[in-house]
Image 1 (cartoon, rainbow, N blue to C red):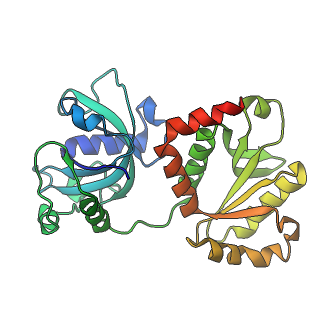
Image 2: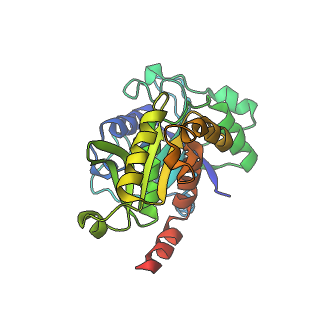
Length: 299
């Protein structure tokens, strides 16, 4: 089970990171999902840095003229970074890392440039849960981390771009060459995987094609998968449903179409939910190095 930590930061520094997440001016963010930010911790906390990757991170914003302070963000720490220049407006000697945002207090993501509009979860609410705010990184007990996760408002359903980003990450971690929005004969596929970049450039057929169903777009998604079947006759045909979290309900949503206009896809298309894709991505990221090592054995 991953460790969990409570980190502190100024509203100025968090605002800086959130704006960079949105605008992607830093090259290290340009190929990363839209919900990843750069965050940091003082290099003197070596004990924490050793446990950082894949741990759960809660960011508490300190009090300032702009905000009374409070809990702002919950996320998962990803890889540690190397920056050649100073990144944040305030403070020195930071160890930067990528943080995947899982949840945020109202206003934080909507108004990254204006901490006055952040409706942070107040210190008093954390104290009610038995969590005191102290200096430096705080290691949380599993039950404390669970309580903090549950404090955040329930997130909305995964978006189309979110799921495409997860599919890209999964494919790349497994060693595939991934293309987003691949076009073929007037059809544009959400995500396609090839066995290698050489296969892609050599005009070989993809190993898998993914269509992410958005509300009201099921027929169009199935039409693109039907084209992929007709053109390449591949086994890797996937429909990712965002309207349902239960896979059995998702399959029942698709089934009438597979018995009708798209009967050729019956038994060929595999139905997955956005939640399943996210969980697979999270598991692969957690064991990133081991997965990459094993995936290279086929080379």
